[in-house]
Image (tube, rainbow, N blue to C red; front, top):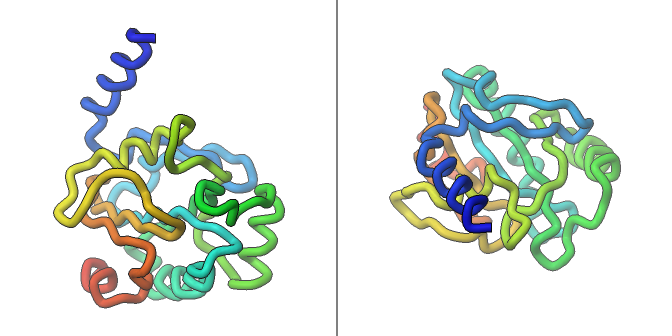
Length: 170
C-alpha cells in the first residue's frame, strides 16, 4: 500500500500539465487532453438535478462564442446530494434534449473522496491564486491555459458567462 501511495504521489509531483491525462467520453471513447494543446480548457463537474444545472445553457453559449480557442469538458459526478443518479446514456440524452449541449461530455466520474478520479485529484492539488482543495459542490470550474496549466478555479456560483471567465478567453 505504501508503494502504491508513493507511486501516486510521484505521478502528481511530475505531472505538471493536463496534457498527460486521458479520459473517457460519455459515449465511451478515449480522449487525450494532449489533443487540445494550444487551446484553453474549461473543466466542469456537472449534475443533472442541481440548482446550478441551468449553467449547461451558459456553458454551451460560452463554447459557441469561444470554440476556436476553448474546449469545454463536462464531467458528470454524483458526489453531491445524489444529484447525478443517471447512467451515461441518461445524462447524455438529458444534456442534448434540455440544453442542446455540443461541447464534450465525459463519462461519469467521482470528483472527491477515496474514489476520486486521478484528473480531479490532480486539479484540486494544483497551486491556484484563489483557492485549492476539495471541490465543494457541482459546477465548479477549472480553467487551464493553452499549455495545460491551471490558471483559475471558479466556485459553483460563478456563471460560465461571467466577465471573470470571458476576460480570460479574449
